[in-house]
Length: 100
Image 1 (tube, rainbow, N blue to C red):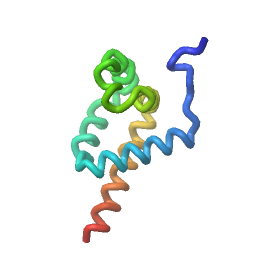
Image 2: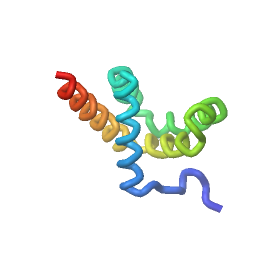
Image 3: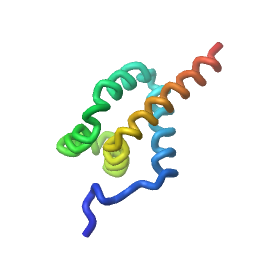
């Protein structure tokens, strides 16, 4: 039996999740606080992803268990935190240019 952390996401799955997350974050006007939180917690992203599993019972019903699992797996890698920040910044810039 494979454990949760042994299941790897493909690069395409990671990119799709990053894009969808960035879209949802910018759509809700949460780009700045999200970027701040991600940058502040980047050094401990792996620990935070493991810690998030303790709150699965509270968060999973809101976002869905599968999505919660994917996000914790995604954010357990520091390079994905950087990729998500970049995606949020790009999406926010796109929204700003459309609004002008």
